[in-house]
Length: 377
Image (cartoon, rainbow, N blue to C red; front, side):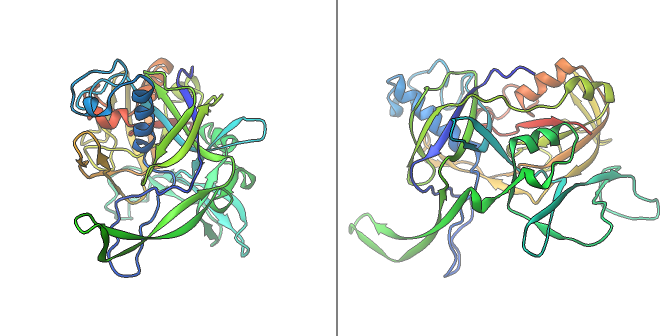
């Protein structure tokens, strides 16, 4: 599959406040940061940089008074789309390596010293007829283990490990990195402000998590349908903290689509959160669990989907919160069998994301949601 996206490496110059949907709540609670944040964070920052580069008044653009050739208007986005957004790191020679959260079907085991000893993949199996369950799919994802083991969390696959995973191989323990080697958390205390009295508001002391990335660690953003600025600085995350960005020579790993088409089965792995009308189910799945997409027909045989998350955000154009939507988390895995598709159809689907129509939720589509990768099964 040819990679035609423009890649940019985004490296924070300060701590970042990557806020989610969780309220502060009870005394003693704090605002947690999301790493990586939703792809809309990078999409918004890059689009703002494009407007600034082209000398466009952001207020006029927000009001729909003009149309940008790549960004369109807030209500009717143009061809710009964030096609990929991952954690990444850059080495001393400038090469950028993408880093990926463990997919839901990949389980890490650790020893008593919290060292990763091995990775094991869930295996879809057909349950015995005597077993009763509310699971709606024909196969169940089962972890084959000879004995109990200590699970390990907070891990990230290296680019080489991700390539092995997409090829159907189980990555090794040396192909994962712990979160603590990529970033640290810095707790900050803030004070709410009374805008009328121009002083601190009573009873509005709060605590938030700031994310301090290690040197060389940042994000890899991929854009299609437009050419973002080559280099510069961005306002990123809460409080608009500074981040530098520049071109990244990157070739995204991919599965052998020819082999997948011949095998007649595949895994779909979400690389960004999935906003699906049927909740955790892939779009276009009928009551018989049949999947029908342009150029593709298959059966949804099995799924491993972590707990649903809620996506929202702030709409700068309308100056109001975006609608809260339930999403299947990044790393959710779906097994398809009885697959009928050509390699060309698989390639086209992977390039456009899991959207049934070009007009479907155009804003979220431009922001990079519903992106996925094919993996061998």
